[in-house]
Image 1 (cartoon, rainbow, N blue to C red):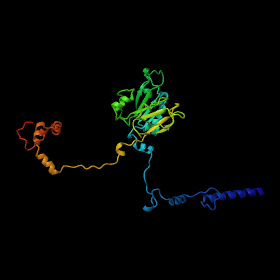
Image 2: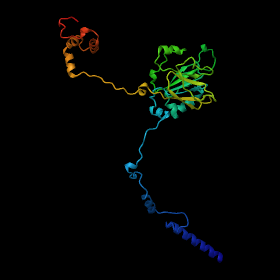
Image 3: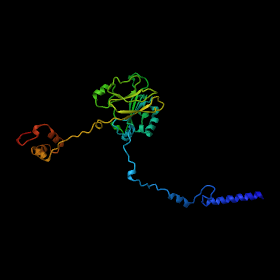
Length: 326
């Protein structure tokens, strides 16, 4: 009898606890808290709406001062319109087996996607390698494969991928191939010249005194073998990038920091004298304009060249006889 009484007591307590929980009264519930629909709506109305903002006095609001600076910030703002081309360069040691990784980088990495030039040495491309094996979406390929005249049977080769957003593919042509930099400097003294490659024990600093070397990071272990020269001072800032595939050389990202001469020089104020209306009318009175307009008719080009030519007979004065033959 005692056992049955205990079982009945436990059943009554369990049923009463269920009723207390269903009633939604947290003070009487001994299990999980259960709220009714009306109670939940009441809680939601006490929270501020997303569009409501506290009324802060203007004198207490924060004021933005200055702007974010840095080379990467300026390069991101200029994107495809830098003063000098942004370049990713390095020794890749065979390019065809790394095209899938390079395509993924240009698709998902901002540094590769927004670079003006991708310049790779040691591509190991030969005349038997078609262009389709090294095509890159959004870039135009320029090749300079290792030739037999170089005396090297394997290795070598240069590949330049030009971003189509930076330069129209229809404007990209290879006019000449030079082996002497001094010849280019003589023919085009104001042109931008860029030299890149794996200069292992062959630094051209002594033979090119007017060029500046911009790679300051290590490209292989603790050595700087891949160098980049430009005939402009204060032009680039170098940052290291991971190697492409299983290559043993790190890539280098060259970001332009060059400022045009117009931005570096202070503003100059000049005073220009303008012709007054009286002076213009006086000049018209001393010239027989019908002589020019009747002779050339509607041919504006010949009329312009005739008027602007440095011939004293073309500017007639009142003292010149009208019967004078031009």
